Image (cartoon, rainbow, N blue to C red; front, top):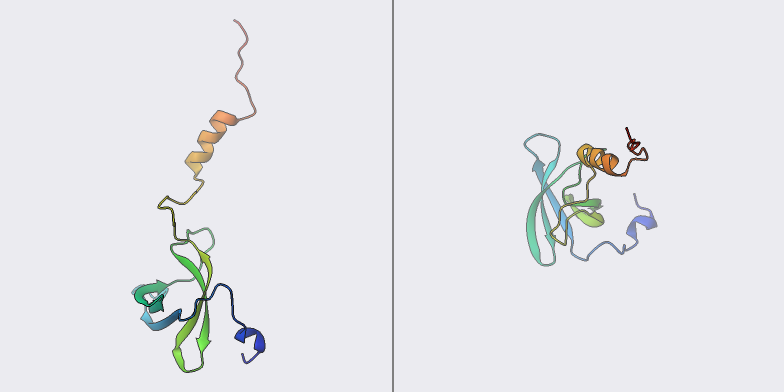
Length: 113
């Protein structure tokens, strides 16, 4: 872990963006954390990414700090929060069925009786 590549500053890392892990979540699948960034402290929960499940919040990379095993520097990989206040663009099965009913290649038979 002492490689120089882990010491390189990242464009996605804000100075002072730090997470303190203080316990497991109630369901045991994540960790409860306190995060300091931008001069404010927030509480939150870290969860692993699951294929096919929506992302609620940010995808972050945590880099352990040498001064404490419970403190981590935070690098944001993807910000999944909606900054425009709009819902995420998600294609559902109902949407696909509606799309196919409108734009399907097959044309109805319009021959005269």
